[in-house]
Amino acid sequence: MVPSSAPEPPVGAVRPLRYGIVGAGMMGQEHLRNLLALEAADAGVEVVALADPFARSLSDSQGWLPPGRGVATFPDHRALLADAGCDVVVVATPNHTHAAVLDDLLAADVHLLVEKPLCTTVADCRRVVEAARDRSGLVWVGLEYRYMPPVAALIDAVDGGAVGRVRMVAIREHRFPFLPKVDDWNRFSRNTGGTLVEKCCHFFDLMHRVVGERPTSVYASGGQAVNHLDEVYDGEVPDLLDHAFVILDFASGARGLLDLCMFAEGSVNQEEVSVVGDVGKVEAFLPSSILRVGARTGGAASVREEAVTDPRVAHEGFHHGASYVEHLELLAAIRTGTAPEVGVDEGLWSVAVGVAAHRSIDEHRPVELAEVLGD
Image (cartoon, rainbow, N blue to C red):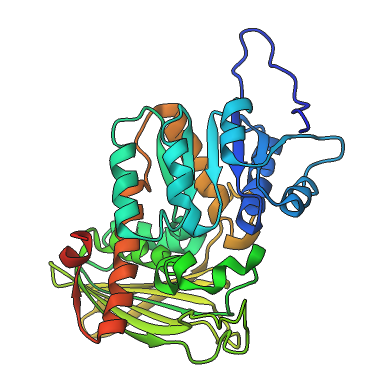
């Protein structure tokens, strides 16, 4: 274990919030890079600890530190809790471990940022929601797509009335297959929760945010057509869905559509988000970072287009700066004592829609959210 080299602040100075990261793999390192950028910007944060049972992940993470900089390292989250003195803990462990890790962390006096999905099952999510209810530390869920600059601008435009009453939300993600992870844990749905939980909880959360309500039912069609079919792990072929259409119905009459394809690298934009209402349409495109706003004007179309950036972002990382903004918002909530903008309820509902979508595919029928949430 290497102790933190950061000195204590002078008497009377405000001490930076001490961060620990549990899970030092791909997303743990992404959070580390964002937090180091916040340190460099004097945002009042300090990374003091990393925890992971895999030595290679810890070593790779430490490679991102500035020369001469050290942090404490631990084999697991329990050791980190006992010795690191953290104010905030980021959970970036494999999906299927979240429930067990959170059992311990929720009992501790720390703020939490939990990577998506909150858990892999509705039952585990509900248990986390209950455990988080009366604790003093806040729990933020890493559904950061809503903070990507053009998507955030789309949300602002919709909130400002640009489309009128929201009637349709369509999200297309055409992208590359799942990347390799430590011990290939993400090759099986029993570990990830399934593609529509693991990957798409972001999009269901975004639909909820834009429409302003939760869906009542889900209908989905999808399967595994191309990806990972030539891979074998301990005699087992991965079972990961790689394409789907998912339709969400809302009580207000609004509808959502997700168009997912994970063997579509030949795309100009990986994500396209469209919101249509009774007076207009707003679209966001990534990675081109374009926002397009159109209005219905007596049967004719009036459309403007602009490139969108967020000047606050000091590290773009994997998610076009969204994780950096997410950390800024988390910091603001901690310092002001306000509720998290993306909390455990959002985590629960985004998982529940994914679970319902998988059930719909498996059973070839529409699935009511009440049925899933009653599990």
